[in-house]
Image: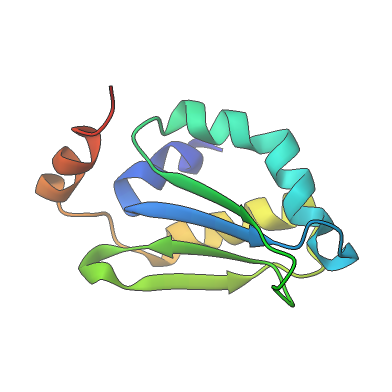
Amino acid sequence: MAWVARLSITFHELRFIYHTQAPSSAGVRAFLERHYATVKELNPGLPIYVRPSDGVPEPYVAARIGGGEYLKREAGGQSADGVMRLLEQMVAVTPPLDPLMRRHQLADVV
């Protein structure tokens, strides 16, 4: 799980979009209940947006990476551990941010 601490050097921000009651979003909700505190503790300067939306047909995880692009993965039907594996895969395929960009990101932490 050492890769979890690398989220803040890989992504500008992380987003979890899910439906509040749909069964397909149960894994995202369980992930947030079980793992959000650890992820945030290991990445205090990383903005993490949690957006419940009943208008979303399928839940997804999105990360803003270098160049302002978004990396998006569908999370419908995943378990909490499945969402964790999605994040791990996203970190594995994304190069680290430029150190100057990371310095600006951490400047927002108070």
